Each structure stands twice: as C-alpha cells, then as structure tokens.
Image (cartoon, rainbow, N blue to C red):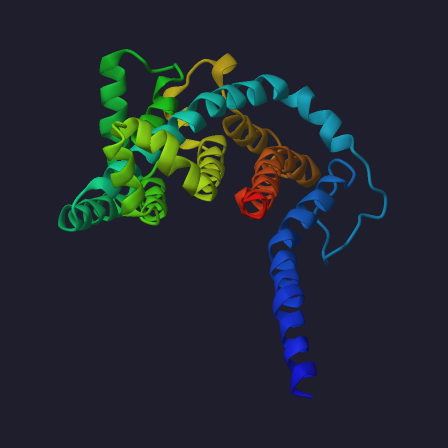
Amino acid sequence: MRSEGAVALRFVGRFVVPALFAALFTAPLWFMVVGSLRPVGEPPPRTLELLPPDPTVAAYTRLPELIPLFRYLANSALVVAIAVPVTVLVASLTGFGLRLLSPAARRRAVLGLLAVLLVPVTAVWATRFELFRLAGVVDTYVPLLAPALLAGSPLLVLLYAWAFGGVPESQLGAARLEGAGWLTIWRRVALPQVRPATLAVAVLAFTLHWSNLIDPLLYLHSGDRYTYPLGLQFLRLLNPTDWPLLMAGCVVATAPCVVVFLLAQRILLNDDPLAALRSGGRR
C-alpha cells in the first residue's frame, strides 16, 4: 500500500501539478487566440468560450490594412537581433567579473546591483532623453540599443553571477596555471558550464526588447522606424472597440516570445547532460 501511495504521489508531482500550472499559464493565451478568431467588429463574449461559433481569420487579414504590419515587425526584429546578443555578452562578462571578486567585494557589488534594480525606470526617463538629445541620436535605434550595453537589467547580471558561482575554483586556477587569460577562461571554461543561464538571459532579453514600448515612444519620431509595440498602441487608438482586431494584434506580438521560449526549452532539454552521460560511457 505504501508503494502504491508513493507511486501515486510521484505521478501527481510529476504530471498532474505541472499540467495544472501549464493550463494556468496557457489559458490567457488560448482565450486571446479564440478572441482573435471572432468576426471583425464583434464585442467580446459575455461568457468564456473554448471556440467562437463561426471562427474566421478576418482580423489577421485586416491588420496590414490598418498599420504597416510587416515594416513594424521587421524593425522590431532588427532591434532584437542586435540587442539580444549584446545583452548576453555584456551580462555574461559582468557576471563573470563578479565571480572573480573577493567575497566581500562581491557582496558589495551585488548590493549595488540590487539598489540599481530598485530604482524605478520613470526616474531616469528625462535624464536619458536629454543625454540622447544632446548626442544627436534621437529618432534612431541607438537609444533602443543602448540598454543592451548595460546588460539590459541588473537582474540578468545577477543571474549570470549566480550561475558562474557554480564553476569550481579549481578549474579557474588550473586554467590560469596553463597560461589562459581571463577572457579565454570565460569563453572556454566558464561559459560552456552555464548554458541554461545563457538561454534564460537570452529569452528574458528577447522579451524585454521585443515588448519595449516606452523607448520607441520617447525616441522615435519617423513612422518608418516604429517598432511593433508602438504600432500595436496606434492600432488600439484607431480601433479601441474592435475586440477581435486587437486580440489578433496581441497574438502577433506574443507569438515570437512563445516560439523563442519553446525553442529555448527544447535546447535546454536536449542539452549537455545526455552528452555528458554518453562521453562518460565511452570513457
């Protein structure tokens, strides 16, 4: 009886609980997709519905008629394609630098990053805008890419610092004895061991830059440079009561983030542990 109870508990913990959490987080996405499949101009349903009575993709075909959809998507993709690798590079280098500090200096640096993390973004909007205006880069993508040079957020640096903390000191010392520099150790010894953290930082950076609305709203003036979140805001102003159209725009905005998350999860599940087991078996 005890063994049967243990099996039941393991089944619940391994399958039922994750399924409930998955349903909890995917339900809003599902109802957003369902809302986008309603006929254009219809009000939202009074009750929850799993599928609309007459599903149609008319809202998606109407999106390019109201806003330059593909231009906005291309602009957002360009910003993300540059900002995400830069963010990962800067965050990983900074996190590795924290790993090399003495424990006392590392604690002070972490406290400083936490203090910066608590500063509201609204407190620096005016100062940042004035700096970029004086530099003559307003109405360009430079203000949108500049946060990547600071790792996007202190949280990403702290994530890397925590991950690099698991790299044994003996490996770092052995690499130094072999004559490797710190950049070589970061690239060839430390970074391969924190690949899950790299995937997490890349996904968070993608979401951060893809969904960025405030910076394009502050710094971009030319319509041909607008990113998709800004275009989605214009769509809401043009048709504030067209529920299916707004849901279709939200689906288009959310789909890349979902795809990136699923790809990162697939890479993570097929990552180094199996390769390590195979190499251990060969030895």
